[in-house]
Amino acid sequence: MSAGASSGVPRESSLTLERGLALLQAVADADTEAPSISDLAAAIGASRAAVYRLLVPLQARGLVRREGSRVRLGLGVLRLAGRVMPQLRFAALPALRSLAERVGATAHLTVADGNEAQAVAVVEPSWTAYHVAYRVGTRHPVQRGAAGKALTLPPDGQPWLATSGELQPGAFGVAAPVLGVVGLRASVGVVSMETLVSDEVGPLVVAAATEVAAALS
Image 1 (tube, rainbow, N blue to C red):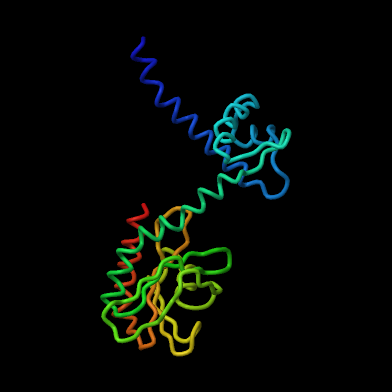
Image 2: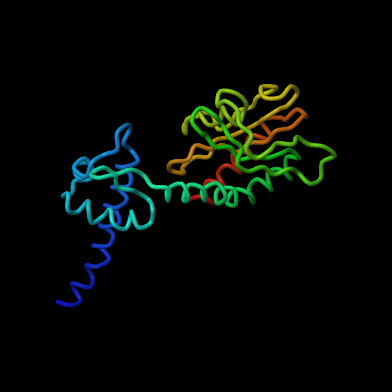
């Protein structure tokens, strides 16, 4: 009897974690007014008493805050979000470094932020006489440039694309989407002031994007 009860503990903990995450997601998904306890109970299929219990550890970590009977996201979510980009950058750097050295062009990881594309990691080649300086944090519309346009490529579509002069006159870019990472819209690409032969560079960019996806999975 004791062994049976003990073996059920991990399953009970797993269910509690799943419900806690579902509750946090329900708070985040509220479009306008902060959801009430009753709203959250309906959203996750639990009782009001269960919602109150689940809120306790989330409040303790600053992930949610209560305003009477209503619940909003807390500042703890911002602290967690602030750690995403450094970890994303760290995971992508080996693949970007290899890509930059092989192609002899500046390699970058770009993520979607609404309707904009933002460079979050950049590696410049070490052996070229000159190359494009591309700053981390650079933003541009997703409809422009290889890095932005690659964010919109479907998984079953073309594996990469190339552009010329869309962001900077005389600059050539080749980029491919990072596929298979839940919740992430990103691309890996290279940019150069010399013409890039996309049929040669494209497969290298796709391979780097696949390597980044594996590092994040």
